[in-house]
Length: 108
Length: 108
DNA sequence: CATATATTTCCATTATTCTGGAAATGTCGA
DNA sequence: TCGACATTTCCAGAATAATGGAAATATATG
Image (cartoon, rainbow over all chains, first blue to last red; front, side, top):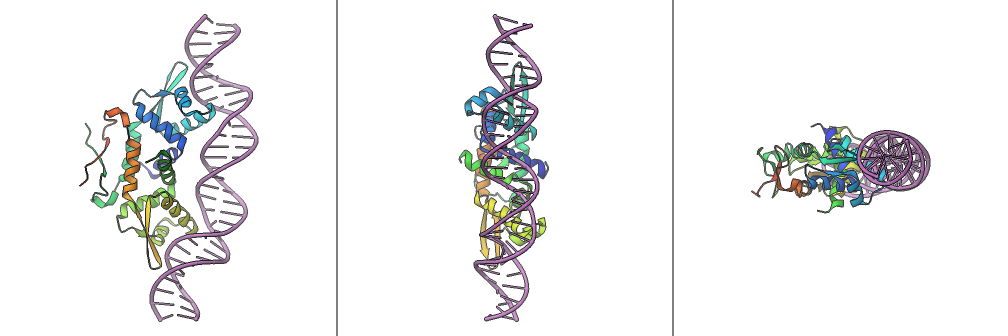
């Protein structure tokens, strides 16, 4: 992952509303949620919701799946993992950088 | 960690220059680097450098240690870990969310 | 087809952030 | 004390982002 792609993702998450949307989707799992439900839970004007969802989508953090009149959005976990990997890349020269340090686990 | 604190950190990292600064510090380890060296490597005007460093500092991602005329900055690894923890919190309902999923390792 | 609902696009306003020159502050060594 | 250097603060202009009303688009249902 390149620096600019990473900073675009981080900037996308660096906003209360978008981070709240993203967390909801991360916690919702693979099925995701449709835009209406997200907007209702966060009490967002449709245009505002759409703006933020488009932003998250543009940087690749979430995916969309149309279903009739609805559009379901879900977190792209691989994008999140790439991003976390980028942040911890070459972290602290091989020493454990802190108690409870984050490490990449082996694929299951 | 609260949502707003997390989004402040993410926003701080969501800028090419600041992310570049932060990565340099993450890779520099506990000793850190002084502002001049950072600025020289990234070819930043002093005021610009100071602005970005202040931003990272304000949200708690980096710490400073004055040493004579120099100020050494270093990444605060515990802040990074809290942030990563926040992002993966309640992730994907207990299933492994992706190949190479990030997990929190036991303290050393 | 007509109507209701979901979502997006268009647009303008407001708010925030970024940038860097210049001046200020603080520290060192002679 | 003086001059050189490191860093920050002050400031203002330029650029970018956020918000939401209203209209457009798309799809489902009667």
